[in-house]
Length: 269
Length: 232
Image 1 (cartoon, each protein chain N blue to C red):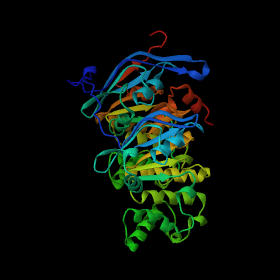
Image 2: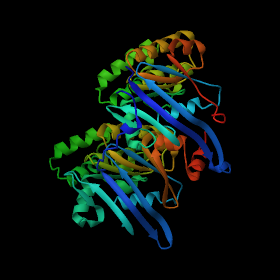
Image 3: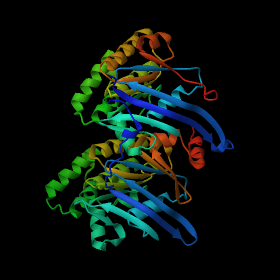
Image 4: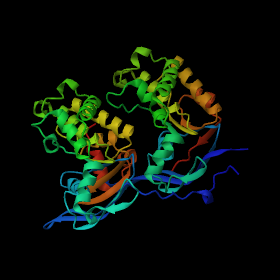
């Protein structure tokens, strides 16, 4: 009765994903950026998207974040009330609200995600005000908490990020995104322009925050080391198509597709 | 009564090297194996017979090519050959532990938290998890002043012990061990052996590679000899 038998193998119960992308296509003129891309993401999961420059990673992220309309395919998101909505079938105001409340976007270049001229505190507080916070003291207190979380001295709260180092700016961008408690965070090469030592600190911070807050995240990177540390699952893209997906350590240690094998073999040891 | 935790049926595993002209390396063929609670199965066979490959396949680190790897996960039976990655991650949290030969160091994370992490991921409070991690590290003779440091600068033996502590702390029902005593001196090896044996006696099913004959004889309740892939 306690034997393991093939006939007892359980079917995997279906759980609605937080995000489901199916059959996504995007061309720029004759250039194919994404071809028939499909994947799903569940709460608490970090999905890494790897592949060389020009493989369509960033286009995919831009479509998923609704900054770029795909030529074909569906992007479905489970709302807080449990309903599932297709991104481009929503009304423009509803989509904007979703992006302000449920989504965070961490850009490779902090300049694209921050307002460099206003104070660090205001950069963080602005997202809170966008979701309806009005009490100045609470907003400032919340901003200070988040600066501490991302290891920025609270004494710098009134300084503009223009005066911050690249690593600090990137951490501030993360605070600005996470303060409104999004359910999905999209990151494009989050450690891209940083020194190796600063990268480690940021990765460690991101790892901690993702697991602590149960965030779902998509991390686009060309750095397989970053992917190994951050991502639970990995998707490999080449010429606009997904060529392989699986558990991160499985894809990196037992790659199946010729392109993934090449990618893994090219890492400097 | 035998309480089977893991069953391998007709497992085949090889590697296709696409960038070496599609060269095919067959490694495992026709592997059948069952491991029950409270057993410690020792894999044996000359170098190159696929002992490590088998362990990695049991943990979902390598893909199953042919055959089945059935695992009891809570009250369900899961086949690793068809389980979605998300489910395998969940199984690693609650059902399958792994001690690899080398510690994959996460930058900046203190040793105590590296060891406590498997308990944290099961929802156990930080303080209780750290306390249990501390108890294990103490038994493994890692001095307390090192606990707050990341293990990157530790000696090979110290890293290995940190790795053992992390791999055993959650006492999952199935624990996979790849040479857990390789880099250790006699004293530390004895401690690691005692820990593994305690975990087994408390009911975990253990499967491992131990090159040291003494360790193998002391811990193993059964030996599984791997056939040569070509001759099988």
